Image (tube, rainbow, N blue to C red; front, top):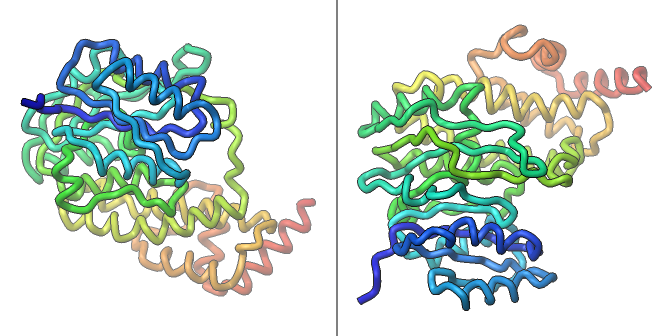
Amino acid sequence: MDMKINISVIIPVYNAGGTIERAVNSITIHEYEPLEVILVDDGSTDNSGNICDYLASQDDRVKVVHKENGGVSSARNAGLDVASGEYVMFLDADDALRFDTLQMMYRRGFDMILGGFAKLQEMSVVESYKPSAEMEYRDVNEVANFLDRTITRKHSYLLNSACFKLFRLSIIRDNGIRFDEELRYGEDKMFVFTFLSHVNKILTVPDIVYDYMLQPDSLSSDLTSDNHLSQLFLLLERYRPVLDGLKSRFPSSIRLAELYHVDFIGRYVCRILTVFARGKSSLMTESNISTLYSYMSEDNRLGLFSLRPGQIVNILLYKIGKPSFTMAFYRFTSMMSR
């Protein structure tokens, strides 16, 4: 008789030959039997695929899926397709779980179990985030309270990643929840927020369970490139219905009601406008500015001083309401600043 699997850990692998064994060992070092580790080799061009096969030959809890390259979301979805655990957890191939994480986190009866994480650079902790206490949230109103505790400047990082959490697999499958394979930015957040709109019971664990290893190239991505801006426009398109679904499910949440203003407009729309203000993006068109202004028009909290001081000019230009004038202003000020 096959053993019931409690947890499936899904690890997307792409050219991670130097780190994948450490990541897997951080799980299999424990004598925790009701477990499967699913390595999804996403078309690696190094020796990662061979290492994955070797690890599977050494531990029957390890399984390997080989596929053509499709990106981290595609790899995670492939892992979800074959997972058999009651819960799933996601681990990146260059990160690691803390000792006894799975035994400590696994509790029956919850839809999501949330721990904390640390960012490490050269094996030294740079910063860490974790829930403030072990808390059980057992109905819709209590989950709304969880959201109000977690959607804060101090704890918002806990919801922006799909890692360091256990997700009930049946909720994912029953509701067709997938990682958006078109997104290269914000895809974790969209997965977590979509999942949250279907949960009734959450447990928070006030322990660091996951080590996120900072890589040199993780600090150097160009957040002003047209490619990144294109991803932000796509994220805005995807984010709006997800946020509406959350607010509909948890109408008593104060923080959710504020999130459109603080996060959707204050973080993402204003980030695009700030790049446009430098006058260097080919995406600065009247049509795109009009799209951003239409989002801003739905923010009933938006005032001249309601966001960071650096956004006052962008908000003032929106109040004028002429995208052609905004473009001309941005181009003039960027030319004068050279």
